[in-house]
Length: 132
Picture 1 (tube, rainbow, N blue to C red):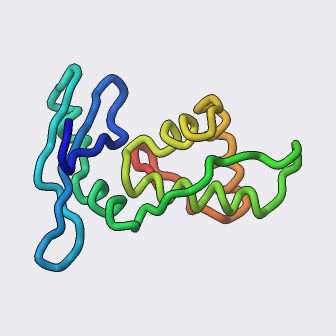
Picture 2 (cartoon, helix red, strand yellow):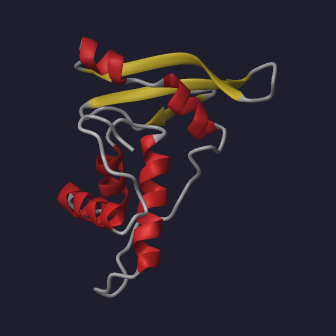
């Protein structure tokens, strides 16, 4: 696609492209949506345009992939995990999957990191079916 179209993280097996333009208030807003793949009602319900717009406006800021330092478990790493998880949760319903893809690690590793970040108090107790 050309123009102001960009591809954003979407559900597994679905390519999500959005057209972003500046609104009257100067913020970038979604003005077009293109999906490719097996589109179901659940896929459509999972799309959160407000999260995409938040990311486009720098509210889900870009970050370096998570890297666990030298086999140690420092608090700074788990604080970074918490920050990255919150930012990813702002733009997708599968934040652990997104972080795993960025860091080139299994999703199970990200789940362990998030569990430890919660244990250390950097993230609140999780709620079933709710990212964040």
